[in-house]
Length: 584
Ligand code: ADP
Ligand code: MG
Ligand code: ZN
Image (cartoon, rainbow, N blue to C red; front, side):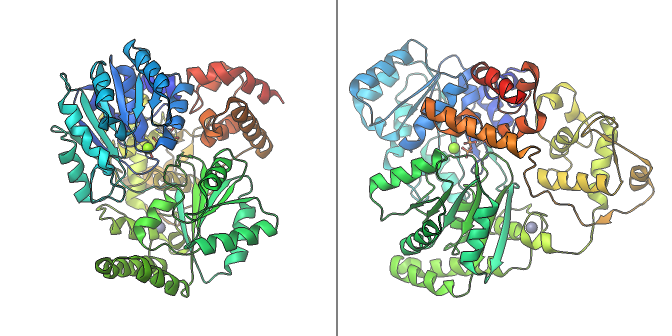
């Protein structure tokens, strides 16, 4: 099997790539500078980590957030990939030790903060290492036009130029704006880079807008509905955070809070409690979230609407990094507009006021729109192919209209036909969207005429349509399998003799957990383990992995290894224990 897929399986326990990952990785491995723009949670880390494992020399990763370095390195370590980080929190001796390890080839990835590149002595030490790749994470920090410019990012290009052998340079960001993207390529001096600009659509985020609700009642309902799940409640001001915090705390809810007015130690305390899953609900201003890679935030609730669509999308982007369904509730009350206008008038500089007010107006337009919210947001970011119907926002879902899905159904059914009824829903979805995966490569599915013919649709949409076709009998499940499709008479009529598919899509809005007790005990086990090992629970396993374990109930090594997120190292570490837990 291809070394790239092998690494994905062995270290991460995944068997298919997300959008763009494979293309980016293969270009990097060919030695071409690469620039990947993928949304938050899109899986950018794997894009430079897999080449790092495969390259002979080591990879230097430049990453702006010290808080995240330890997590990233823990994550790699738990996946069996030797990694280290160097930042200002360490002593000179520790740093020397790490450099020694790097020299002896024991380290595959070294994470550093960009400020390190201002130190001549340190740069001299780096130049002596055998560097195959320099990966720049959060690359928008190099640009003045972005929101978090970091001066020391400007040191990167001169440093690269000072190396006697130029390694492959890779850069990653989730930035949507054109100017910043161009700046990145120019300022990092990428050479004829391979560019991958992914879609900004996050189809696992279910967007809903709630107008003029009784906010406090609404919040309590949502917290209760999401018991045991992590969520962030965003407020407009510190005062609002404090108010809601004490209100909920008094009622006995276990909540944390975060805003710029807290003391540093308080901030650290609440953040850690949230990340360690001791507190599930965080009430915060937009100051909270930067530098949080927690993959299993299951919901975001905007108690007050954000100032603009950029902030809104960034904030809801913190939910569902693991790809599981996550809810984004936006509360909209016309009386909040005044508060926000006031905030803008008191904080924005004179020449920004007008711009900020018009951005706020677009945010209000979004709330009042009768059309697909997702399409609205994607259009706002200038995404061309945004479809006008997503089936996973509250406007689409409350739309009772029947729609004509004949063409989409024909595409799906003909894909089932072309692939000879041999595949399950996941593979079909990947083929229709033109994705790469080991099965797709080894079975030549990328040569089918139906490969990539639904590129513009999200995987959730295709999945929902397949389920609808199954429900309505336009296609059958092969007997004895749980997701393999088989054509029937009605399918052929759709394909050949003009039978129309007019319906409303079924929607799949809940994470399917077959045995809640087992899931809860796995979650407890994870938290317990994490505490003992001094790491964050999600470093051990993601929610997706726990859900799949719950639903598939693996009974032996092979079955465990087939679960997404269990690579070889994690199996060695936890396999036995998990199998025992399954017996209960
Ligand atoms: P980004 O940096 O783009 O915001 P990350 O690299 O932190 O995203 O990845 C987000 C989450 O997605 C992580 O939990 C990661 O393990 C998971 N992930 C990445 N690639 C895949 C994949 N191919 N299959 C399943 N999960 C993946
Ligand atoms: Mg990242
Ligand atoms: Zn929609």
